[in-house]
Length: 137
Image (cartoon, rainbow, N blue to C red; front, side, top):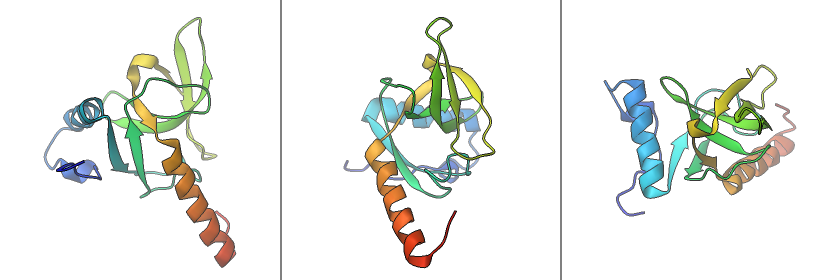
C-alpha cells in the first residue's frame, strides 16, 4: 500500500493515551483491511515471539485455534482462541506460553485475525535457526 506505514507500535503515538492509540490501530485495520505491527510481550511464544512483526487482517471469521487481536479496556492483545460458547457468546482466549492467563471476551472485542501465513513463516525461520544452532526455546 502506498503511503502506508508497515509497522505500528506504541512509540508511533508519543503522548497519546493508549486507548486512543488502540482505536487508531483498530480504525486502520477496518479502513485499510490490515495492518502490520511489532509484537511486544511473550504471551504467544513460541508461536509468535516478542519483537516479531505480524499482519492483522480485518476479519471476524474465527474458530478455535485462530490467533486474534482483540481490544481490552485500554489496549489490545494477541491471543489464540481456545474455546467458544455458543450459548453465552463468550470466547475463551489465551496465549501459547506456559504462563499465559485465560481471558473471556465477546466477539465484538475482536479487532482482527493474525494472518496465518505470517506467523507460520516466522515459526519456520525461527525453527530453522534453532536447529542450525542447536538451541531450544
